[in-house]
Length: 199
Length: 304
Image 1 (cartoon, chains in turn cyan, red):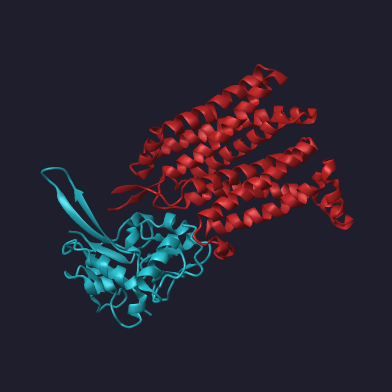
Image 2: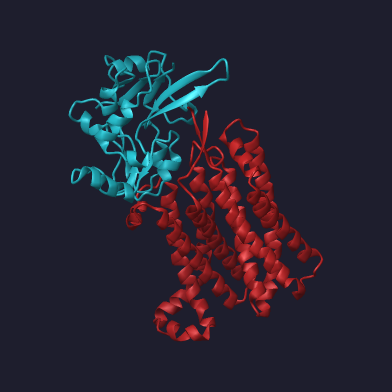
């Protein structure tokens, strides 16, 4: 049993958004509605002359203490044995309680119009057959095939490092415990499994 | 740090929260008045029926906002979710309210033929459990009112909502709208018994508005002095003219002034009827605006 997590090295991100494109292609997310499972925030920090550009790739943090899971009244949001937070599309009623509870803006509604558009684009091979709230799955279907998430394998600068946080020999474990990496919004007690090495 | 307005819950959920609080509180106040003060049964039946109507309508708004409303029964799965408890409270309320209201409908001669169709065994059972249904329904009504606040306070990234003051504010506001609605009914009713109870309702609503003002003061005091999104939210509300004029002045201060005048200077004369009806309508509009603006002012506090 693994405990999957990710380290994002902000020092190497160039903001090419290849991760967003790969995720969209892999998971049929509704780019036509400007909704993505992963997003690269492009921010400016400071004031002239001391200005910095910050590129921060973000996604679901697959928290240990999941506010979205507690908020979901239907049990549609659940956690796998490997700690991946998923949504059962057939059980989701789309009440948005999870979207409100998520401190990381990691969820968005896959609406009826998006399902229709998806069918137009992908034909019979659709993965979102009903409207539901959608989020990153760490590409668990790829993990099952011993492949990395699409965003990780696509990243040209190896900004994203994925693996088992409990495996001491894994790169992700070494980076997460190196003292350089930190989690977002730690004060909320969510214990995210996505860590950031600041630029 | 970025502050972003939430756009997930809009006017439909604000309407659900408003009608939930109004319906729950209307029943609670009606049943308590009936049990401990005595109240005109005809007015009581209208109040209870309309409280059921408010909650049915509120539920319709909630369902209309969902992506998959036909699967709503799944909402009874996770007891860690406030929506689960909302469904439990509302269903328990419906059961108690129906048991409570059927014997009251005998006051309406036109409805008698329908009531007579109910087997006498069931009718006498409803009569026997009338007081229990009133108490149980009152508790459920209170729980629905507080639930509307608890639901939105369970948002760790929206610091303006994530505070115990919000459920308290919604309780006082919900009960104030409930008292105002009953006051409105008593001013419309031509029955002497209904008008008599308006004195109590007038006093109750004034007390509730004062309590709401105290909680509101504490709530904004907390929000304005924290270096978080709560301060941004509070400042957003201070710069929303409809919140200040519509909710704070017209929905709280003016009704309080009218009710104070009614209690201390008008000596409960029928002359103040139209003024009281006006004050009640203002409280109801203010109650809706409060929920609408609190939802609008919800700001996510993102770490990027």
